[in-house]
Amino acid sequence: MKIRKLAQLRRENKCFRWLVELCQEVFIMLLVTYLLLLLVETIWEGSVSPHLNLNYLLIVVIALGVIVVVTMPERVEEEKRQLGRKDIIMAVCAALAGAAIVWYKTKEIGWVSYLISAISGVLIVLLSLLIMRSEDEG
Image 1 (cartoon, rainbow, N blue to C red):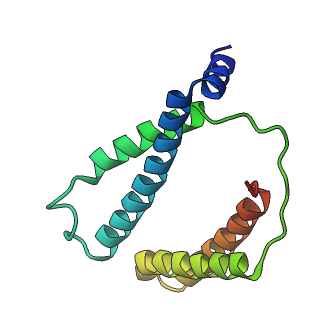
Image 2: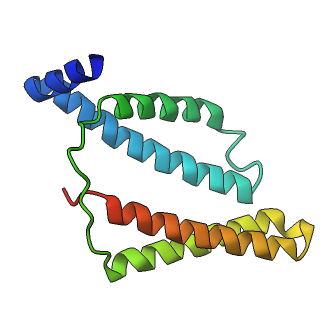
């Protein structure tokens, strides 16, 4: 019931619609910022943590994520779109970067780290392509 009321309020109230769209954009920016800062802190330990506590940023990202999920419009049906060359290149680059990071963090365990990083790279590319294909074009 409450979700339907939120959807109705979103359709009728311009201010509420603007606020929801603002939350969505801020959530995306903060999520990317958090992930990049976490990556920098993972690679170069002590480079971010003396200046910024990433846990506080994570709390804000989670709170905004909850708001975005609760206020999302209902999808009538999911459209599948064709994957372009750009999508495939982006997924492969993300998979290579992810596999390299996993290998970097697990290289102390020996040859198994190569297997783990290869599997994680394959999972990243498959999930990325699956998500890109099921996204709406609009």
